[in-house]
Image (tube, rainbow, N blue to C red):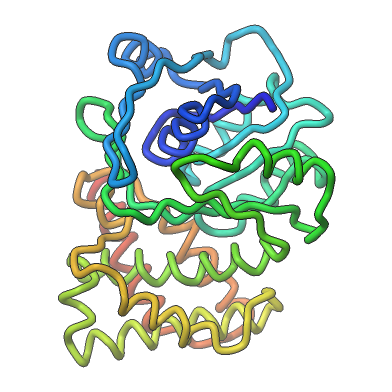
Amino acid sequence: MKILIVGAGAIGGYFGGRLLEKGEDVTFLVRDRRKEELETTGLKIESANGDCILNPKLITKNSEPEAYDVVLLSTKSYQLAGAIEDVRSFVGDETMVLPLLNGISHIDQLVEAFGEQSVIGGLCFVEATLGENGTIVQTSPLNQLVYGERSGEQSDRIERLKQSFESTKAEFILSDNINQEMWHKYLFITTMSGITTLFEEPIGPIRELESGQRTITALLNELEEVMKKFGAPIEHGISNKLLEKINSLGEGMKSSMQRDAEKSQPIEADHLQGYLLERAKDLEVAVPVLETVYTKLKLYEKGVNN
């Protein structure tokens, strides 16, 4: 299959690189500056799962229009509108659009842009960052990409995609309930990003405190209640399972939002916490911890933007 990776940052660069390393037909859609960098240095991955240097095919938004079988999007939410416009000329009638963004509201944006049939579901679990020299640094063994038809169907096209994704050094998992898995990831990442950025600490020191445990639990429960109220397809008692997961993470684990804040970069407060806060207001659900987290994040944004 012809696979287009939008961007060559930490997420897209890592998973696209693993597919390229295997021998799949992978092209990266990048900005001019990143294109020049990659043409000089190659796509470098330093990983707990094996290092590599690759020479990928590169295009820009102004390249000759051409339809790809799969377009993988891993941008930040605040970059999505621009990415949609950049990729339009590479999405055909049969193209599968696979988003790896955190959250859920991006699905509606993509469906509006490309149609219900084009958009499949996806998410990932990987601790990766882009180093100063453009190297993708992936620091733990966990490197999962989960995908599937949003209908749950085991379609012919998803089976073909599975064949392309198999036998790489990353773990590509085909799900028959991707909608639920996306909502569970949304609950997890909104809690993790909110807590670690609120307290400006990795998860370890926070959860060691009794008060930290209570705060994490309270936020999980608030978010789960909001999701249940508007009918999100979440598993009963999912907060308890996610609390166990949070408590099993490495002591030094930071959320990507916290790392972005430490670098004075934009964050996804509105896409993650803000979306659920608005739903809570509409449903008249009290969410005091979520409001505290969101206030902290908006004050950060105000400081950065000023």
